[in-house]
Image 1 (cartoon, rainbow, N blue to C red):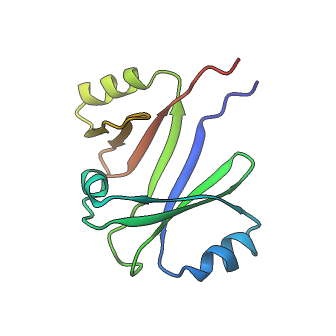
Image 2: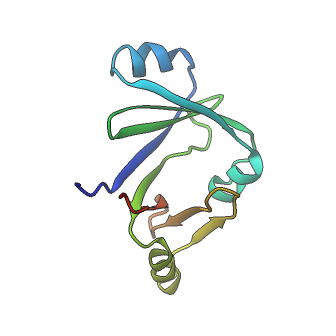
Length: 131
């Protein structure tokens, strides 16, 4: 089986009609799921103190998280998510090299975010063996 590294891209939108009109009808993506993120988590990751709705759209191996904000110039949610074979090793290397790591403990799986020196944010997911 081909190894998949790409997981998703996250962007901020402020016009809910774009979900159906643009992402579904124009780009041909499907609405995969919707969820809300509490401000406590968003404050830790993005320094945003507001509960936020997220809609995931995608097709096949491509996914986008659409973070719903009141205005486009509002602090953004952009980040790149990748899947790795050994997330603990990635965290260890990042911390050793003074890259900021945010680890949020959750019941299902911890959320891990690492920033590069240019302040780009990367979410790191653990690859699970597929048998």
